[in-house]
Image (cartoon, rainbow, N blue to C red; front, side, top):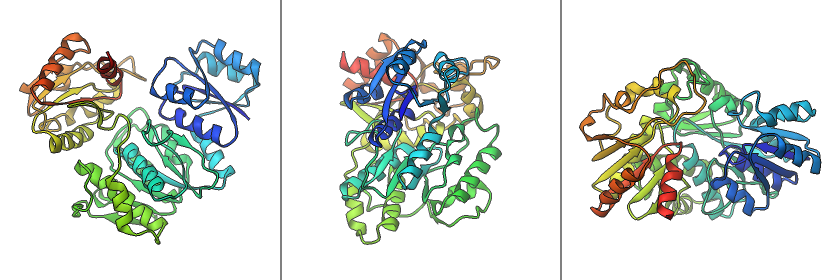
Length: 420
């Protein structure tokens, strides 16, 4: 089959494109602009067009008829490529339908990593552990990896490791063999209208899973007793045997340790822990770009607090640059910006990066969003410009660790300045 991915540079579609290619299908696609993922895909030999005015998909379809058009949830209904696919009778779906098809086609057992926070790091740890222990695996993770492609199909594998996102109810399209729940908080108000609906979705997902591993606090958060086979762990366990930085990272590693031990009882626990303690991390999850300069995808108060805790294990002086993500989300979490940044000595607060917005909502300003911080006096209202970069360089020169957080344009901005 010839499968075309619209939005191929995204963290959801990029890895799936690699898997689809490895599974024996012809792959092509397009995106609005170049990025980390599109560059990685080009290196692996996938044909990518930059631009989405309709001419790109027409050229691909003319060259080799497209059998399946896969698109990101961010694509509007009147998008030229989506319209073209429908007008030309091409099968159309989002990513979950294609991935479920490949998992079933190849007779794989799904290991799903889900939750509000920590999915990417935990999925990366699972992939790393499998690789280090010599265990074959197919997988998809929503970032780039230093130790392999973002998505892979291994014909010798029994398992498929998947970062199973709750956005757009993606996770509910799967019935995993094993599910890991990393951490739960209300998120994605554009998909789940209130916390009760969000919790109900996770209860349903657990009930669709063959076996589940999670923390007791998250089981309490759900406020229901899922009719599922599960293990719930005490979040206050002594994790001193795990030597990775960051309390939340150690908790994620413990889930992986238990999962690998359950799937492969003949592999010793010390061997699993040793592999995890060498985990190099993933892109955009506390990723070191230069001395005292880190980038992180986190954009929720819980993630901010956890990442700052990690940063303070490495430095006594931390400066946070924060770009909120999506105005509609800020309306839901604005009251949670209280003590989540108290471990930062200085905070540079940027305007919200807007995506998939409700045009009727007031755009909340940095001043409004930061008003309730316990360390509000440490906040500087800023923009992504040369003035900010000069200020950050001064902090670095004085020995402070700079942490740039956000899921929008902040990552590409800081990378460009590091490279210039």
